[in-house]
Length: 531
Ligand SMILES: *[C@@H]1O[C@H](CO)[C@@H](O)[C@H](O)[C@H]1NC(C)=O
Ligand SMILES: *[C@@H]1O[C@H](CO)[C@@H](O)[C@H](O)[C@H]1NC(C)=O
Image (cartoon, rainbow, N blue to C red; front, top):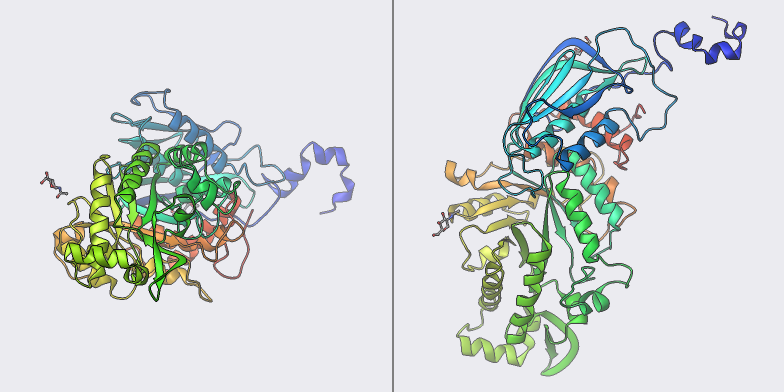
């Protein structure tokens, strides 16, 4: 055709779209891609059109606690934006289409909605989604299921070659395989700006993760601003600007809540605590060399009563700042050299009858810490060494398995002892290799260990851990996404969803969707994203 015969005003009047077809510009269609794959999906070839101007997401007619739920109002607004690509600059979308229209998505919560609650280990995330003309319905018992269903609905919508938004008639019935689906971030090795943490929470919601494991402090820096002990961050943070204030922490917790994500803080002791010592005199053990005191310090000093007074005050604060039922107490990789060098510690060991077994000293410390934290009515998570060293744990303790070699044997032991467990060992995303390592994370089967049905039921889920030695604000997102997405599907979808080719196709498109929504997710392989 010869375009020059048309005046530019004719173009403005919209003749060009008529010449090219019902929409412009002509582009390759986007594909539908569900991630993680829901438990059950049925779809028909019948497609419905969605108009960005008139389509709405709203409360269903019999919704419990209607219109008064800020969490849902926010989610409706957000998902309208995601469905219609508010974050993508474009040449405009076609205003008209030929075909059946989907006018609304009505969301109904069928029992007490938990609108103002925090998600917890028992939160119900199940939902049922029916997309049919002219109104789609999403039903869930609780708001948490509604959030997951909204994400799925947004993933069902794609675009035809004319750029019109379409969705196949569909029925989705869904609930997660595992209730604990975590991402670990580390804000001690490098400080992560607040907006990076919020962006990570967005991406977690796109992947139906529901726990942020916030490894907030460690040897390298102490960015948590404590109101009881303000010197901890004043002296222990990298700089006075690189801290999380009370308000920052509250912002993270609320942003996460609105996305159905728990925030479990980790305050790792007695090892990994060098930064604590800068703002809290006498907390750490002084190390000796040839019977001379040196300038260096080891783990928390377990022999002083002042240590336990400090921990008691500190964890009382933590239990009030974080609404979450669980606090992670760490307990990994305690280096015994410094304790061994210290004559006061040696004397204490003799008094207690510990012999030369420093694991007994560690257990003594953890035992007292656990009693302190239990008295705040919180449950606790610990790294596997605490269990391995035979510390007496409350029966609701969650043991996190992280050591990669023999992790199946460890799962077997921990669950045989009756403890619930979370698996992180095969999902240390800080280790990087050339190529598509997401396949390795994807292929893990968490229940592939020897044990009874009862033992398998004690596996609550897993955590994708992105330790921060080589990660800061510049590379967190591309390193985490879409590699963590592989873990997300493994923890959400049924056990038999494991075809790598099918996963590759869906994940490629899911990754593009994350990019469109403002997540700097790295590519899986060659190709490009339809914007
Ligand atoms: C969706 O509809 C299109 C157009 O009819 C069809 O080609 C496609 O197979 C359908 N998708 C599914 C998953 O049924
Ligand atoms: C833990 O022990 C308490 C008290 O003995 C008991 O009531 C509870 O059911 C136990 N919980 C688990 C998870 O075993």
